[in-house]
Image (cartoon, rainbow, N blue to C red; front, side):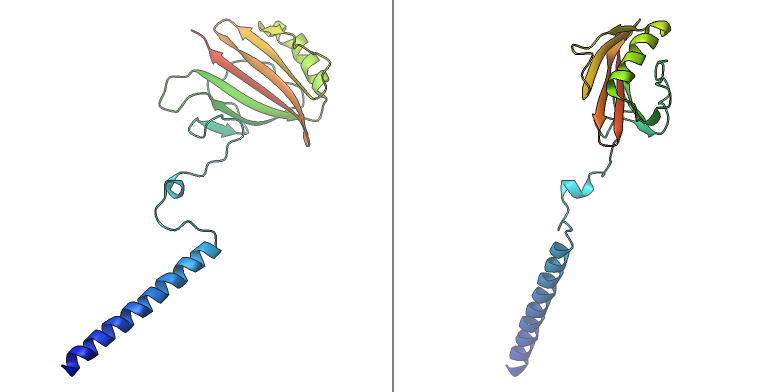
Amino acid sequence: MQKNIFVITVIVISIIVLSGVVILWMNNEKSRGQPIGNTAEQNAPNIETEVATDPRFPEIKGKLMSGFPEIPVYPGATLIASAKTNRANEQDTGYRAKWETQDAVVKVMKWYQEELPKSGWVYETPNDPNASGEQVAQIKKSDLEGFLEAEREEKGTEIVVEVRITK
């Protein structure tokens, strides 16, 4: 009988100690900001994109994606990234790219208004071609159509080109 009481006491003490260890571990994980358990967010890749509208779309930083259409590039602009507008395992539906420059939005858009037609692109003038914060122009060429956007940001002007394959 005394042996059974001793075994039960050891089991109860072990459960109490183990519970304490689990509670301490959980509090430690919470204080470090780590999720506890196996959550969907924990298993999802943490992908930061520059220009892709979906993290599952292929993106390349610092160069143009293979297949990106020929389009004049604003002089002195730095290419940040380019991407497809579809998942890697799907047929190509279009492309997107982002450049940065220190020049003003109006200057950038005037340059594109002059240069795009020389390369066979149709450039539709934005509603307010004198807007200094942001301008968006529709662009078209054969089986491609999309937009060109220049927007003033803290670090300069972002130039985004997005084209869709229409055929």
